[in-house]
Length: 247
Image (cartoon, rainbow, N blue to C red; front, side):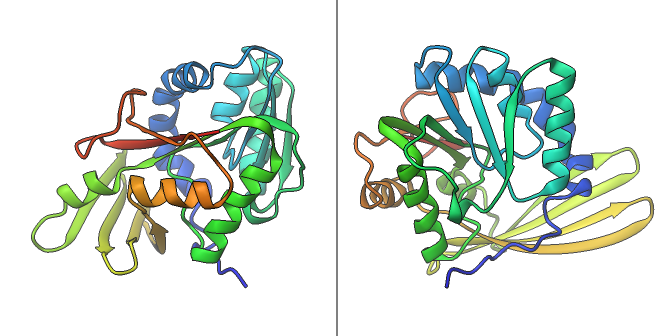
């Protein structure tokens, strides 16, 4: 049985408290990049999985695309629906597991954005990719966007642990990130200080190289796999982000 390596308390209200403004700042430019890379006409049907609080799905819907968003966090889906109503767009939001997508050959494209792949064990991650292939129409396109493993390794200090800090007023979120080269996974200890209260969560994330992820995609049934950087240009070892485009 595939194992879930991230707890239910990782993506919650605290996550949005610290990450919400950063995500909103980048959303318009990301949607512009997504639409350009997909090259699909309006009325095409897209799946955003996981969709989080709808920041991508609702914007894409406003451009005339038919969008479905799937996520396992009820709080995020409620926020996504409220934002869709405020924007005057219609998006179908579904609560579900990435490993058990409840669709068949329905979509022209699938989006898996902002380091949303790799949170399961190897079997679970394979099931996610196979599910993406299954829900796409013949000739459909998958976009996976995530942090670059090469960039992480290049910026790990000699201690083997990188530290990332986010602040909001007097509140702090600290990520202590290490990497296991044998497992090909990063491990993060997240410490959040909010309203004077301290909370800790830990999670593990598979971070395959571009070549390894391309191989996984081909095994899942994809062809014409390309590795791009955060601007949509050819991926290099100096790229901050990795976008895999597969058909």
